[in-house]
Amino acid sequence: MKLLFITYPLSPFNTFGQGKVGGGQVNLYNLLQHLPPSLEVELITNTGNFTPAMRIPKNLTLTEFPLIGNSQKEITELSKRLVSYVKGKNYDLIHTHYYLSGIIGLKLKKELHLPLIQSFWTLEKVKQNYLPDYEADQARIENECQIVQNADAIIANTRLEKADLVSFYKSEKGKVIIIPPGISQALFKPIERNLALKKLQLNSSFRYLLFVGRMDPIKGLPLLIKAMCDIHAYFPDVKLIITGGDKNDLYWKSIQETVCDCELKDCVIMLEAQPYPNLPYLYNSATLTIMPSYHETFGLVALESMACGTPVVASKVGGLTTFIKDRVNSFLVPPHNQKKLTTTIIEILQDKKQLKAVKQQAQKTTQDYSWEKIVPKYLKLYEKLLSKTI
Image 1 (tube, rainbow, N blue to C red):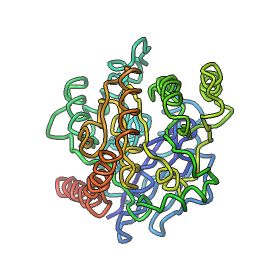
Image 2 (tube, rainbow, N blue to C red):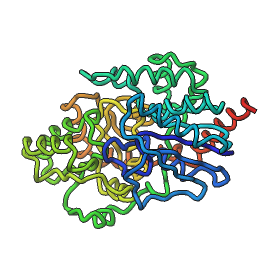
Image 3 (cartoon, helix red, strand yellow):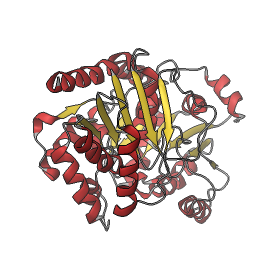
Image 4 (tube, rainbow, N blue to C red):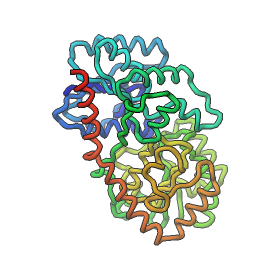
């Protein structure tokens, strides 16, 4: 089987957590690592910011074509170049990631008569629904509708994303296939806390809350910082680690200002996006990972943390609700609710017995998301589409 993957504007070989590089790129990177070596795969993506530490599998050809903007003219020009490039390469199917790639995929599907699979990760109508005062990009919505109607299959992370595709975009139910993200259990696993702290040069006399994610308003980070005012007053030995983005981001700077305004400079540690192999040390150093998001298509950070045995306190939104069972394997709180977030974290930090029980269940939950269980779902879909075209 010969597969063509396309992902724009971001590459899965960019630094995770910087800019807009998030769970979608993390999942694609790991999918490429775990596909059978017998498959021949070419990934066409944008130029720039390749992270040298990242591994390129032997069966993967990485091809870069630049896309600077996302205007219709630029995408049309790139699509023409890719049609010329791909012709004669005898691919069996196309799998596109994110809506910009889907626009290109539709043109390739039409020209080359190949089946098209689309993974969205974020949907404009969904963001419009969950974010107050969000100004939706109508051109993007129109493009997403075209992709939904014309792709041969759409991969949804959860049953909730499938419902959104059907409700907001009028997708046929039968063409939406649920395949959740996978977790690399060789990487995300429990590590002795003192070893993790030593690796990160963190003081073992403190307890740590952890935030991992892009610098994006949808992540609800100011809510957590304001909650820290009460948490730190209650527990002077508790600090918050924030990792993601880079110090030149405008949003990063606004978060720094919020930390200073709340007089929390001594108990909040801000780190730029960390190398992927460092994340297990961060999760294992923390007592809790906090996700005060306003919406999550899936919430891969929660799964990574739970695989390390570190429970999560997360907003009861989106994909997080599909694998977190409140007070069983982690904790759910109402979104936009600083008071409930604060009291829940304080309660957990006080109750060591409850925390220990939840830690054990957190790690067990992630066993269902191993790549050994997820990859066959992709292969089944690829083979099903190929059998229809032969």
